[in-house]
Image 1: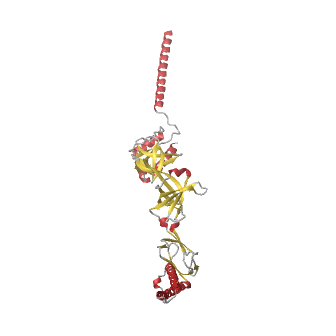
Image 2 (image 1 turned 90 degrees about the vertical axis):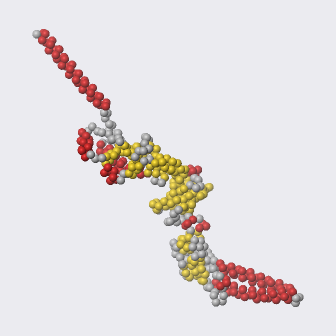
Image 3 (image 1 turned 135 degrees about the horizontal axis):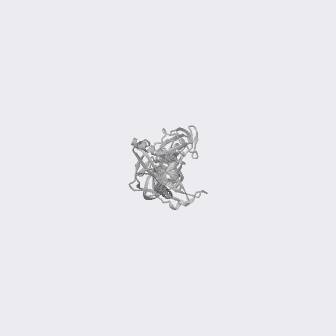
Length: 417
């Protein structure tokens, strides 16, 4: 009986040992699996977006590569368009008179010497009368001088009579020269003046070529030398005055290119070139005037317009991509690079079912990895970049539609959480 009990005890002990060994193996196996597939932290950011060919085509995503571009560092400054004083003119009359005709209006383009207005004054007739009378008196004075000269030479006349005749002739000739010049300034040809052809009206002409900016007279009004009839501005000589702060002055050089836009029309870009740098501060603004010649298209530019300008500094060649290829998130900048990497897989059964469903549909997809970059200078639609992690020179980058790729990635991340 005792021998039977001993056999039962050892049999039970052997079963217990085998059972414990199996449990230990199962635990070790589970631990190994846990080490091999660590769980992804719940707050880990998504870095790979997956888009189907249909989605890529629908939003117009375009791929490109990093290019070596000659870009410039820049300075932004505000300024004002100005026309120099030697390209502005007041249209005035040298003589007073009543406006009879006006041949221009504000905005009219005129050439130097073109008739702007005509004026009338009886004094103009008197001036022509004096010219004709002086001419006649000179003819008589010349004859009298010759007569007195003959008498004096033959000791038949007094010297004082010869001197008087000489003086009278010189006085009349001086008066004729003065009247002749006045008639010319009035636009009257002295040779055409005669008793049957005296003019009562004068023309007022444009002193420079340009555009009529204002008209201050009207038909029937009286004007004189102190009353301008109109004003002309030659916008072809318009230049740009940029206001640059003291800290940026050492970077400025004659010959630098300036791209600028009108404050009231930011759609059109114009070009200018620095030709002079000011040497004193403008009032209390602590800015220095940088004078620039406007080059190329000047359509729509008017004296006094406010502008915003970008001064191009030193050129440098750097890896660059189009501006729209860069997206911003949380104060950092990113690009999307086409990759063979796949998005992180999840252990949830629902996700496995979704993958199985996609596999059945056999939808072709492309993956894009989000890589952080540091922005450099921008110019002509391109921005220099320095990748935080290495990007292959031949890598395909999303150069158009990066915003949509980022939105897809963000939506995917929110859905997974």
